[in-house]
Image: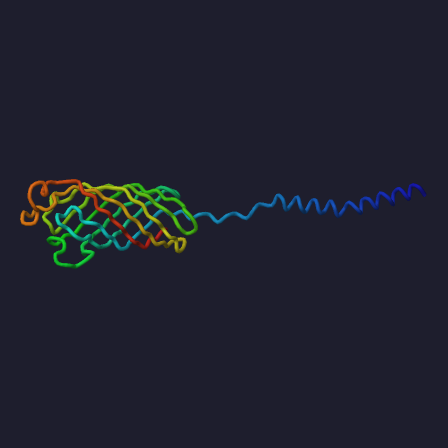
Length: 211
């Protein structure tokens, strides 16, 4: 009789602990479940940018207004943060049409290359910074040399519309060295005709395709 009573008590204890054991195993499994993986940041190999460009015109003597045109760039990226960019631009149209305006019929062509650094800022916004070197040509002014060594640094912001498409606002300051104007009639006198390093601020608003 005592033996049967002991067995009954043990059975009751076992039945009481079964739910606790099952609950412990359930919470242990939930604790060790992996957190949902975060969506990886897209990594692209190439970027194509095309859009509106502006440059000041400090190398042209008595210039009053900067020029507008088109700016295009191709970038080869290695990983998420570093790349090499090639930038080409053509500026022809004055920001304002007044009389008197810029002397002659000036235009500016530029081709520059250099490293670029990308950074994730917040949300859909990325930042970039670049250092560019190359050449610049000033036309319509008989400026010399025909092509000047040019270079500078700049930065920009990308707003990512999708995985492959973004809009970009960028700017830089490009230095070059031209004779102000080789036309003696509008060059001025004295040192105004000697070559000097000039800085032109540039801005671009572009559509960017990343792939």
